[in-house]
Image (tube, rainbow, N blue to C red; front, side):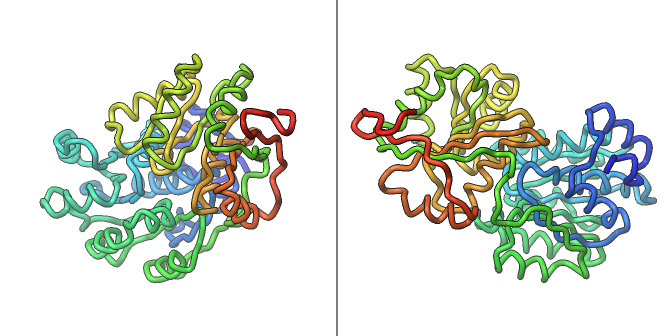
Length: 379
């Protein structure tokens, strides 16, 4: 379905045309009409399906047409600062020809600039729970004028322990509001939470919660821990791999791997919670512009990495939670493109691999095995 068929106003259509949007994704075509009608929405959609535009476009249109013009009128709560910045960037692009101002606030940086920006009549506030609660408690932010509430990546807010904070935030928002709830997975705890805050919602499920991107080629190498860096360097000798996102479990592991890659002449950088916000943003920008070939990331830091042309994801270490695997490989194969996801599995992680394969419903193809520095299967 084309965006021209979704009853979006001309200024939004013009902005979409300028950023190259023509055909709506499935989540967008299913979500935008009911949101424009003012209905609550329960959306289940994986990373890379176009969720941000699915809620941002109708919200911007409704605020543009609203008679109320002052105060924060829409609130988007999201678990990480990277996601907050990504949503802000998109909202600003979509609202280029509207009288709507969007602002992202998040922790990890001094609050001064954010507080100053809040005084400039913000319409759409995108916030992480901790910083939002902090500024509310200081009396800097009031949510009394909120018309639309969006909870984005709800399952990860549960994983990160933010649900109680979110409940405190919701308690300060008018009951008469429109609520949009998005989650990549719908475990029982998330569904129960959604049912408690939504009123007769339209339910939109784009991809079954346990499936992975169809355009992503998934494979596994069996390799000892000490052999993993050598295998990664071997694979990256293929210059056709222009950009690669590599996942580690820990911040220390990410930093260590970057040092090993740098010694091998592979330009790389790490992104994780110990890095400053400015450093993280700079590294993301350099990766998007291909000045850095390999980005090594932890799961939390990787939330918000939104790059259409990311052909290659490596699970250097398998995640503890099978659903996290789905989110990781959802970073590739976006916007209709094909992608490659490679996993490294050592002897201690075979249970995690089995759990992942049960979740996705098939066994990954085995590309090779490395033990004691020898290739047991041709790579």
